[in-house]
Amino acid sequence: MIRLEQVSKSFESKKGVINAVNDVNLHVKKGEIHGVIGYSGAGKSTLIRCVNLLERPTTGKVFIGDKEATSLPLEQLRETRKRIGMIFQGFNLLKTATVYDNIAIPLKLLGFSKSETTLRVEKYLTIVGLADKHQSYPNQLSGGQKQRVAIARALAQEPEILLSDEATSALDPETTDSILDLLLKINQDLGITILLITHEMHVIQKVCDQVYVMEDGYIVEQGSTIDLFTKPQNETTMKFLNTIAQRKLSPSLIKQLNLSGTVTRLTFVGETTGEPILAQVSQKFKVKPNILTANIFELKNDIVGNLVIHLLGEPSEVEAAVSFMLDQGVGLEGLEG
Ligand SMILES: Nc1ncnc2c1ncn2[C@@H]1O[C@H](COP(=O)(O)OP(=O)(O)OP(=O)(O)O)[C@@H](O)[C@H]1O
Image (cartoon, rainbow, N blue to C red; front, side, top):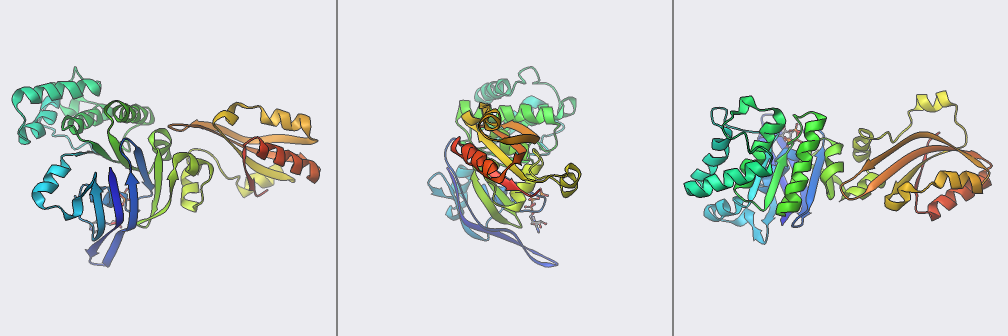
């Protein structure tokens, strides 16, 4: 549905050329939700703006469906843009217009009749849960409600694709979750393909099928959400994972705990998450597993559990215990300690 082939974007500035996006390849299939995560300045906004050609790539190709948007004449590009809705961190609502008009005005500008406009405004305000707010003004709404209006405005044009530029970054955690639930609902119920950018791993965790980690304009790691959560390869990915679950024991903690022996992280995915593996390990082998940290979190389609344990015992028993856990489908990663 969205395909980027070797897309780069540079800007001329007083300090020289800034390569904001470098050689990015990306493919979002119809109905999927993909997320790009990166720190400030990584190039995420520039990248997402290249998708609807708000920024024209310096080199590379952008495909929307089977059309190469980067080579379309302006008139056809306008048509293609109608297939893409966008929401923003700052909502971009007209302050002096009611909720109704915020959604209706773009439709009127697109030439929809009054009755079709009314129908669509009502339909999409109901979908976002604000059917009773027609006549409110943006300053009478909470941040989450404003984002819901912005989502209704984007949906009212009945796009196939929704681009989300840090749509939850200005919201508190609870409101963030309610907006993410809404994105999941419109993805599932309306079949809308979503590409989002974020600096919050929680957003990726909750809604994304595929993830791209971006740094200095490059995609430094990409894969399914489950793979990134269980087998991260890149240092930046690990830093983002650390924001939701402790992955490393700090040297001072290791010192305080006076750990000797084996410290390992166990990763449980799906069915193995509920198995009492550690109880079995201590029954079958002469080892004492001591849990140092533990967490369990839900991804969009999976459950992942992480345990950091300290295994005390004779090396041969520890080795046998480790091998048993591997056989049970548990992911293992040695940690310093
Ligand atoms: N119009 C522009 N002119 C010059 N430089 C730009 C322009 N837009 C972005 N940049 C530069 O490109 C780089 C990437 O910026 P971009 O906004 O895409 O990153 P980001 O990951 O979205 O960061 P943030 O989350 O802070 O917005 C930065 O160095 C930025 O200063």
